[in-house]
Amino acid sequence: MNRQLMTEFKSFQRRLKTMRRVLVANTKGGSGKTTLATNLACYLARLGHKVVLEDTDRQQSATSWLSRRPESALTLFNAEALSKSALQKADWVIVDSPGGIKDKKISDAVTEADLVLVPIAPSAFDIGAADDFLALLSEEKAIRKQKTFVGLIGMRVTPRTKSAERLAEYMAETEFEVLSMLRASQIYVTAAEEGLSIFELGQQLKEIDIAQWNPVTDWVLQNS
Ligand SMILES: Nc1ncnc2c1ncn2[C@@H]1O[C@H](COP(=O)(O)OP(=O)(O)O)[C@@H](O)[C@H]1O
Ligand SMILES: [Mg+2]
Image 1 (tube, rainbow, N blue to C red):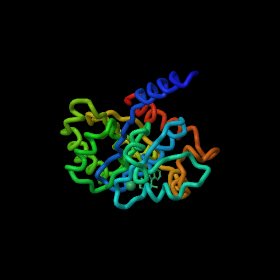
Image 2: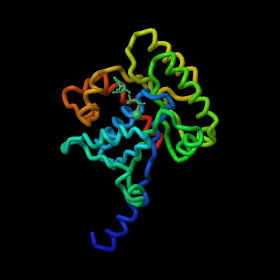
Image 3: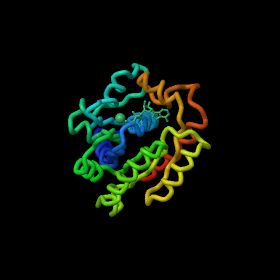
Image 4: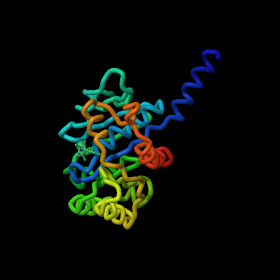
């Protein structure tokens, strides 16, 4: 290919490339936001996409997870370390948000995002808090106008328990799409300790986890 053609091809490629923003949010602390954000980021990086993690939580859990990543791990970028133009060249920006996020900030973050993922753990406290948060989301203009889509994910779920059943019933009654239930498993905890995602665990990654993640990643890829 001659130089002129190559330049044109590259500029065409750049125009095709659009950055997608996924906000992982729930005002309830400990609902699984950081776990979801870091694992999703790695799943997309494994597809060969350029993925940026934006850690908006003062506790900086995602940032410290990034700093624990071994050299052999998939490449992820920290938004903090990137210039605005480098950020624009990303395929995905995954935003991990804090527990006590305020209404105005939620509104701004939702407006900027293409997708919002809400992890909800199975307990009465978590469901109560999620219900307030989802009520807030349903008032958001971007969501009402279907510019931003919301997906719910049951998190840290022990299958065939009463609490799993209650969570499933609750999520099904909301106006939002229910994507999956991710099981409670130590693999999430040990992977996080090592700065890894479950997708980087090799043999330890079980079929059941792949099957539970598939609807999440399919939805993210299809709605972007
Ligand atoms: N599916 C899961 N199975 C087991 N432990 C989980 C799972 N998801 C999250 N955890 C654990 O639950 C705790 C809270 O999750 P985290 O992602 O930090 O929540 P948040 O970011 O919303 O505060 C962490 O210790 C995390 O390792
Ligand atoms: Mg967190």
